[in-house]
Image 1 (tube, rainbow, N blue to C red):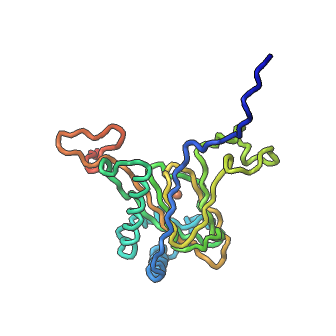
Image 2 (image 1 turned 30 degrees about the vertical axis):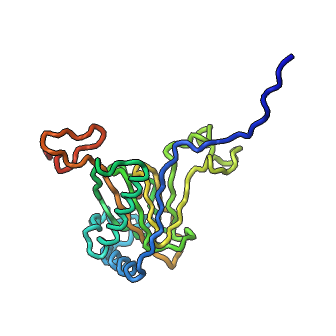
Amino acid sequence: MSLPLPGPGELAIEPLFPVALGRVQLAPDPIDTALQIQAIHRLRGEATSNPDPGCAWTGDLNGVWQLQQHPDFAPLIATLVAHAEAYLQQLGFDRSRLALHIQRCWPVLSEAGQVVGRHHHPNAHLSAIYYLNGDGTGRSGCLRLWPHRQINELVPGMAVGHDGPLALSPWTAPWVDVAPQAGLLLLFPSCLDHAVLPNEDPDDLRCSLSIDFALSAPAAAAEATPPEYLAPHPSQWQEL
Ligand SMILES: [Fe+2]
């Protein structure tokens, strides 16, 4: 006689390998924010796009890529850096054994109808976005983040396929959208693909800052060897 199978148990699905999206809602002084938006307008000058009229104006392509040195932005950016430090700490990094660098810091202005196409930042390690405006509805253009690989859909393409036999679920979401909100800071790995959806609010110029951070080893003392898995400190590189 065969023995009965053990009693039924509920299926449990565990989330493995989560992507670390850092979120911090800051409460900036509205006067500071208004001055910063005015300053970005001045920095943009006559340009309104990149230069394709459908593409948002981004400072990194237009000579405005070191905003951390601008007096209207330096205090804000110092605060954002402190949150980037906390993000690294939560991921488990030993801050005393690495150097954190701002590689670029630039504004993005998105007029009605403009977008930023899907891309990632291959030269950086950690990226940040800070929203100077936005009401949380997403009307001015959500940030869309894509997973590196979509392995839970099992059949490649199923999660975005038309009429596919796969209902929406958090396990197979093809992307995640984040709505701009004034004072919101996001932090995420620079290798993550992302885009900005069209600004559908004709009355709201979408305004944000981006920061690319790079990690290196701290400057090595004389005769010391930098650790293998980090680039040596840039001050110890040799330009040829
Ligand atoms: Fe980007």
